[in-house]
Length: 179
Image (cartoon, rainbow, N blue to C red; front, side, top):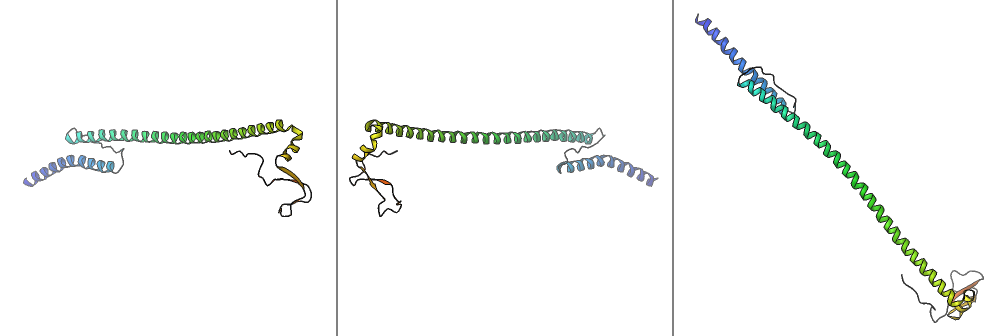
């Protein structure tokens, strides 16, 4: 009879021990899986004791963390989209700024050329008025330019025939303008 009581006692101890340690082993395995990155891991503990409460708390914690990770991923994707949009906007603004700079440079060049053209036209008008148009060649000869026949012998660009205009040795007859 002592053996029978011992066997029954051992069976009861084993049953109680198994009912307590099995949920703890399941919870330990779920915790290991969760810490390895398997965030959808949950435990199924039907006990209504402290171990059952611990299992419910684990499941609630896992649910909260999973929702937070989903929200973090959503915000990360949103931030990446915003960053790409900003990169495109910056590139577009840089392109527009470069075009504006190019247009300004072209405008400045155009203004300078227009001014130079107006100045040249003004000089030509003044010379025409002073020297009477068609008689200009005669008057130019009198102010320091002379016409001679044939190329100079030391002229490396000499051509055959034709007339050439050269300066007198006294210097140029007109003042030069600097731009």
